[in-house]
Amino acid sequence: MAATGSEALQPVKTIGDRHPLALTLTALTLVSGFVDAVSYLGLGRVFTANMTGNVVILGFAAAGAPGFSAGRSLASLLAFLAGSVCAGRTEAYFRERSRVHWVRSTLAAEAALQIIATVVAFATDADYALIVLLALAMGLRNGTVRKLGVPDMTTTVLTMTLTGIASDSSLAGGTNPRIVRRATAVVAMAVGAFLGAALLRGPGLAWSLAASAVLITIAAVAYRERL
Image (cartoon, rainbow, N blue to C red; front, side, top):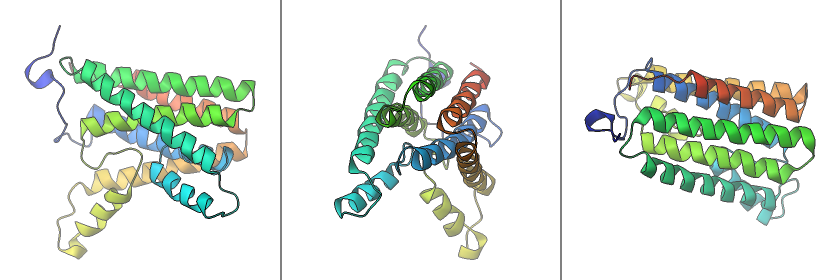
């Protein structure tokens, strides 16, 4: 049955920091740090969540800087864009349905892609396949988060979040709006990166991806919101 009124999909401008969606996006921010740590350190200096980094790496590679691969970064960028296209199509499909079903479906798809990446990592050394799968998952998620429009919860980049912390601070004459949310996003990303790097140095790439798949699966299963 089609959703009506407040149930229909609209950008989410006002939710509290303890709202189920806000908590889920915080968990996804942690996963982003985790995935990018594993990608950059384990798949040849490539990002699968932070596309700004890949654009910069493409410039490095074009200039002949050693240790950077234009092919890997380009593969990640293209897969990320494909995932974002899928996010737009998914949002259009669920436009007259509930936000809950939309978010759950997207989380389930991201979890499935990360699980497939984990299976591939255990089965063979196929860096490009892993890059494509992870970037596709991150593009799907990033496109969905953009459509959701929750302020200061992009889950994959922190540049504007950090800018907001500084430019809206009392030191700058501001009132520190959403400071808890912003600071939590920064901490979540850093913690995710630490965990990803630590697991990569220990059990290795495949087990690191398995842990990432578990985290996103938990987020997908745990997400609850009143219909």
